[in-house]
Length: 317
Image 1: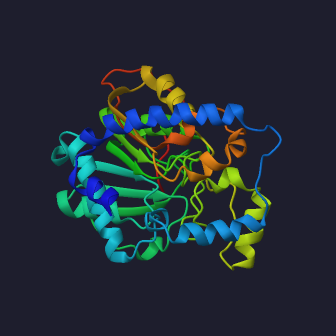
Image 2: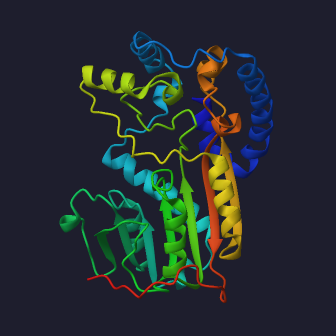
């Protein structure tokens, strides 16, 4: 598929500027349609879920959704580490690295193998923490990113992929990351899809309808999932933050971190539901949030900076 070819063979630095231009055109259209739409029509009928689910299972949208095998997961981890290597200087000189929201631990495992850096992966839920191939340079701990049980200034680098759209209080997590970073240490984040984007509900292979979080009532989505034996909708799984929320947060943190890189990935595809049922999107505070899916940012804790939080030193037991 041509979209996959572009992602694989064309650098993001080349793709983003024209993508932002297309985004601006689509956003103007969306604002016009939403403003002109009926204010009374907010959700589609339950019966539409199955019809649209079948419709989008035969499209490129379905093919783009996450459903990784073990081999694919390691390939994804390798690609993620390339992003870190490209953005973060001096990794080979680092001694302690922390991954927030490590999942199965593939990224932490590869990083510790490639550089023999002591790497710790933390997540609120780990598949089997006691059997996750811990080594001299690798450890996995069940822990909340909003309440890290580490000493102050413990890590040279903290990184995270696809976690900050789930963390209930991203500001608290950033403050904790700041606390446990050494002065001069780096915080690298790459996360999404953001909640208001086309894949924002993270249902992936369970319901393959773009923007289903705005088209249907949560109880109808749950009913459909139950009928199809596809689990249930966990409202706490996504934090609901939009691109506007994260922009405000990173702006607020400017006194605590130096920003070396910041990039937003436009969400340009799968806009059919938005064009067809614009009134369903009246519940969105700002239509721009429908058009940004991912954020990539590299922050650095200055060598001399005011402490964000006055807290006692805590050590992992």
